[in-house]
Image (cartoon, rainbow, N blue to C red; front, side, top):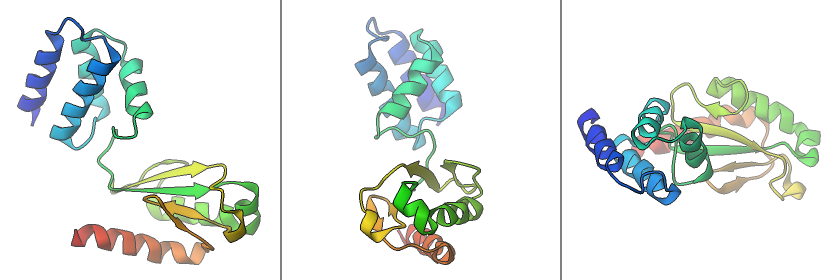
Length: 159
């Protein structure tokens, strides 16, 4: 894998347009094909190869939804809007953090799930809400979190 990454970096380092953002995104996508993600250490190497600040590479990884810093398989978005928080949404978020082993937002300890928050998921009538891989999960309770995560990880193992 490291050999493939080096080949990619050498190719892009030799390009005249290597600082163009479109070219940088192409580079990052090729790296992701090899690694499954664009890890921070490889972001650093890519920045050095193209002569751009590492912050630019990191910003592109965050900006483009198709690029990922880690090889997580699932994204859980917890609503932190007023309605959800008023109906145990805070307890749901704390249960998620505890079960995933993250302090705020971030990638679970096993690297398979990214936890994010969003101020409103626009489904206040069914609060508290989560969005798991784009699917709205309404009326979530803190007690449901272990089973939801077990089911999510079970699907992952069957795939």
